[in-house]
Image (tube, rainbow, N blue to C red):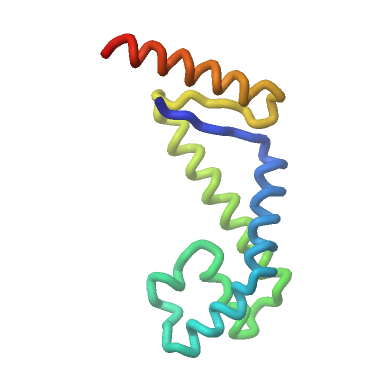
Amino acid sequence: MFIGLKTSKDLLKKRISKRVLDRIKKGVEIEIARLRRKGLNWCDQSMQSLGIVFWREYFEGKINKDELINKWIISELQYAKRQMTWFKKDKRILWFDEEDPKYKLNMENSINKWYKSSVGSL
């Protein structure tokens, strides 16, 4: 059984924005500076990850922190959109809307129904 959770674009943007800001508060800037001092190059694969790539422009003085945050959030939103486009093609996935107050109950009922049908077929 494959389960997917979906939500509104507004809630997704709020969550992504919060996650990006939390990562900044937890010291991603300090960590990147430390890695650079240890010899990691901007071209290394680990420095090409989503969001991290924008820090190069920031450290080089090409963008300010607000621009960096905005670019990071936009890139995460674009990635989430690509993921949804990919996963929507998979007809095996049973989707539940997190904003439906009954989604957890509906999901649990679907899982129980699937489990009973799977166990019964063994």
